[in-house]
Image (tube, rainbow, N blue to C red; front, side):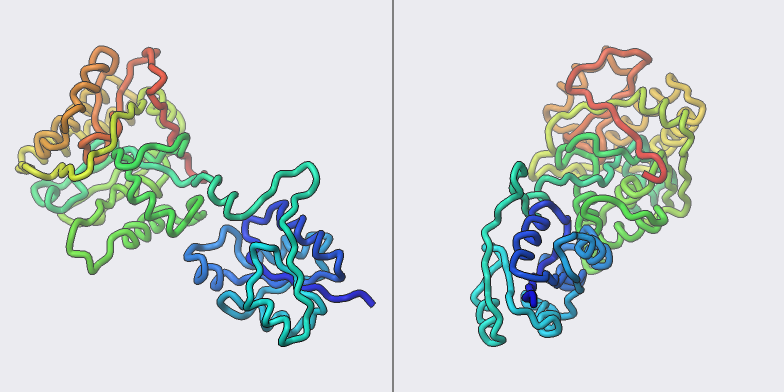
Length: 386
């Protein structure tokens, strides 16, 4: 009669190292696997799993070296005890980096043989670990590019006049710099909820969830503008209307393929430098109804020009939006920014700093067939359903 062998682990991001471990453990007898529940993994590792416990159970059971598998009902580092007692194994097997005196003592109390295996990959394959893979996997969460109307999402601006902000959700075609005006702080908050990609769910609801998650109601300090959460979570080109409140009273989106392709063909991003530590872009702000009107008028004209795919009108409105922002927040123009603008004056039709400014990226509006430089980054607007 073959012996029963028991192993236990998370088996999230299932990889060849797990399969090699199961293969080696099964040489001792019929292999039974305990799998950490979603709740236990979140408690221990302070993150959500990539795959749900049901999906992990399905995948582990499908491996030919496994006789059967179960979700462990317990919690903590010894969440498998109840499963182990039900299986009644002869041998408990762990990887060398998964062993512990506590597990060894548990086996001694139950009369179970305790075996530690070295982590040896299958011939021709490189050694794998979940930790190593997790470090190499890049997040597919979008970034946000603001097109016009930035600052209107703050009530201390929209109290002087209501208006629209326009954002585009863009795919992470590269790792954009932190503190670069592309809402990386909100994106980093989103990673805590959805580490790798947005769930397939109502986009406006995702934006609301992210906005509430990032802004602690007990925090009496700065509230991140809603345009960041909306720009990340809502695909395509979106405009959102603010009227002295943190959340917009209207949201409209454009998913027309010709319009999005046209916009992509005329906007590139030019990295400058991260916003410097201690930089306050609100220092010296001067907000008046007339200046807010200039901002909202530029956003209206910008949206209208994009819908008509009128490049000249779009460039004018784009530039006017930036001028209106700087008029209210002159500290956006930190030392060093003008040098980058001077460099592209003869190439671009218009330009603006992304986000609150102070550094980061310049968004440039380019004419048809304009020459680009290697440091200019084209944008890829995220389509609905991706």
